[in-house]
Image 1 (cartoon, rainbow, N blue to C red):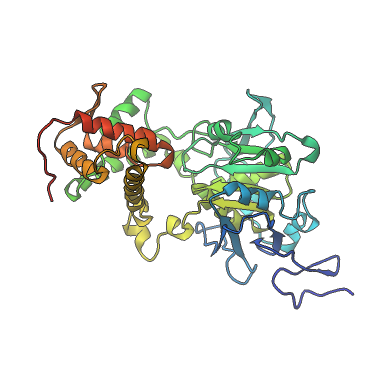
Image 2 (cartoon, rainbow, N blue to C red):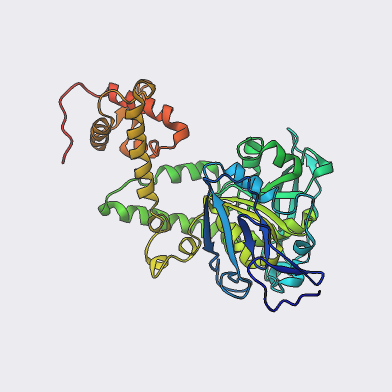
Length: 440
């Protein structure tokens, strides 16, 4: 019996006049459509539910939280991102291809971003660029308000699916940043098995790109030469600084901004996350996919959220990995956006300090497997920090390290724990043999 849309429960939809029940299990939901997430996701995975917030004010933005689209985005985060990635991308009810419901999303959700819609679809002429990769450039509008005027070229790279006969489509990847080359990162990481499994690579082309203003894509250059750029950055006040020296940081940053405005202002006016999301939409059209399959990491989650705001009916599947606070990142909460620097309101310094404290604890517990473990690592670090504030420390190769340099090289990450422990132990063994008490 034909069914109307008047009384649908969450997850139900009508297809060809018939009621279709949702698949059971976790769900990834965008706008009006649900796709079942595989039960293969481990039970330890913690599902998070957060509304997508407005990405940027102005033309072509729109939140999908609220009742208009029933629009909450569900995503999962776990210690094994690969399981989540496979579950959402490969087992999302579309392993055999794009479902009729997804392909017809433009009819179900009439919202479109008119700025991107008015731009021509770029032509990608793929050419071999080594190690199994193909490269191309995509011409996109510099100014989406004037889509037929000046164009800029985006550098794009692809690792084709290994099983063309079973290919589902294209997986676009943004590895985070912003400001990093997607071309370089995909070339470096496309064959990391814990990030892109053999099964996933057999079914999807992996594609990334240098976002506008970055690397090979209409690069923002703030200096006339690399030598002048190097001299300017060498003059930067060392971090961390106390409150009395904050003025030096602000003055240097203001000078940097003014130099960029003078040399690249015409580009900077159009280098935004919203325009990068529009570029992504044009790339989706260029590869011929009817809807976007996307993996965003760190800042890439912000870009994914913006795309979902601009093109809510054109998302096939989206993985937001290591998500940022979308609204806090763009606008700040309450009055923070105008008064508090981004890293401060995101508590970056506190998180880095906590990570380093955990390194010291892990090092102590590891015993001989950690080069910095003899004695009390916490006390040894207190001595090193206090000594280096007064004068540079020296390693066995004769290099002198200032306090800011030591701090910048001790932002601990688990993958660099062994090297970090060896560096700190070198500092310790090179200290003058004299009693020392750090100031309380």
